Structures are given as C-alpha cells and as structure tokens.
Image (cartoon, rainbow, N blue to C red):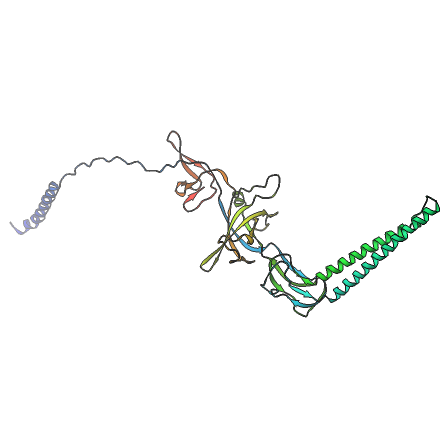
Length: 358
C-alpha cells in the first residue's frame, strides 16, 4: 500500500470502529419494563358539622382614666386660714367629712350670737302683738258692734310680727350655716390634686383653695368605629333609653405585672367625633367593688392612666364558630350540601382570630 492509500484508509477504519462500538452499546442496553399505572388519590378534607349558637364577642379598645367626680375646692366664707388638715396636700387621701381647712370662726360666732338675740326679740314682739290682738277683740266685742276693721283688730301688726320672726329664724340659720362653713369638708372619699392656700393666708368668699377628685368611681372614654359599635349589639333597658350595661375588663402593664380592673359600659356619648368619625362609649370602674385581681385598693387606678379595654358584647344569636382554616379566601366558606356537592358560600365574619372565626 502506498502512502496515498494509507492516508484515506485510517479515517475509514476509525469510523467503522465507532459504528461497531455504538451498535454494541445499543444492543447491550436493557429494554425498559412497563410500570404499573397508579390511580390518583382523592384529596382529603375535614368536614365540620356546624351548630348555630348564641355567643357574645369581644371588642378591643383603649382610653385614659378620668375621675367621674373632679372638682375645684372653694371657700364659701372669707377669713384667715387657722388650721390645715393632715391630708390636705397634693396626693393626699381624705375621707368624706374630714376637715381639710379651718377658717377663723370668731366673726361668725359673733354673728350667730347676734342672730340668736334678734330671734329672741322677734319671739317676744310676736307674743306681745298676739296679746294686743286678743285685747282688741275683747274691746270690740264689748262695744256690741259686729263690724270691725283689720287695723282695729291689729291684723297687719300681727302679720308683721310673724314675718319678723321668720326673718330672724332665717338669719339664725344663715349664721349657723356660715359658722359651719368655716370648716371646709367634702361629702366623698377622695384625693387632693393640688392646694392653693396655706396656713395663715386670708381668703375671700368663692376663692379656690385647691382641687380634688372622688376615688370611688373612675371613667374611661372608649373610641370605637361604627362597625365595632355594631358588633357590641347594644340594647336598651325596657321602656327606657338607658343602655343595658356591658362588662369591660381593663388592663395596665406595670413593669413585669399586669394590673386589672373590672368595669361596665354605662352610656354612649351623644355625638360623633367630627375629625376621626369615631363613636365614644363611657365605662365606669367602681373602685369600691375591688379589682379583677381581688384588691382595687392595692392597685388604685390613677387619673391619666392609659388602659387597654376588652368589651364583652351582648350575645349574638344564630352564629357559628369555626376554625380559622375553614375560611376560603377572605369571606367565603366551602359548604357541602345534602347531595354532597361542594359550593362556595359568602358569610359575614363578626370576629376573626389566629385560630378561630365567628
């Protein structure tokens, strides 16, 4: 074989060998075995039998505590302060009828003595006038004339004496009242907010001497949207326009502790806030009843405290409670009818939580 034939023989040999190797690989590869056909498994779903129930729901709100009774303490008489009560200081607790301030009573004691004297004179004048009236009646009767005028019988003089007695009694009552007002007291248990006078100071009638509030009942204004107000299912007392009170649980986080108090919604404010368009409920916390933790005196709720509120509505009749997973899209449920057909039904969701819906 010459050199020219070798040059063409080598590529042909390589091509033939490659074809043989490919054929051997194809022949030696096992043919695939047919796999058995698996039937599709049905989707597994949980079916819940629903039951209509009557159920209250909880609406959340928040607000600041204010005292129901909050007043300026003023003096009803004038004079010098000669005594200051032990608890008449900012933050001090006081009992109903406890002395807060005493104003110098000497002028009013003198006025009382004078009023008593004037009353005694008026009583004496009336007694004398009644005697003159009897005398005038006897004299007129002795004359044998049945026609008598009021002046002769001293009727105007008797009426004036009676009026003077009533005026003297009123002056005495006023003097006694002024004397009692030299001791400033309040008709409720409370706490002093601030003081404006001190020992030795002269004050005029109507002057502000301080301010305070009653500690028995606190109020909280609770803002709600129109939808939240509807959820409360408000009802009125029969034949009246007063609300049927709703229970409210208040809470306040104090460090690692949670303080709780129980209250009641007592009214809805008469107007809607024009800026926020919110409705406002007013709830009361009766501190005399004790807190939810058993002792309201141990944790007094102070004015200005910002509290969280959980309002328990009146019961909603004919509602269904389901797990949260039953919700399809935003407001729909998958319902299985009597013929085992699945339908989509739109529902009204009253309350939605992490694991349940109403």
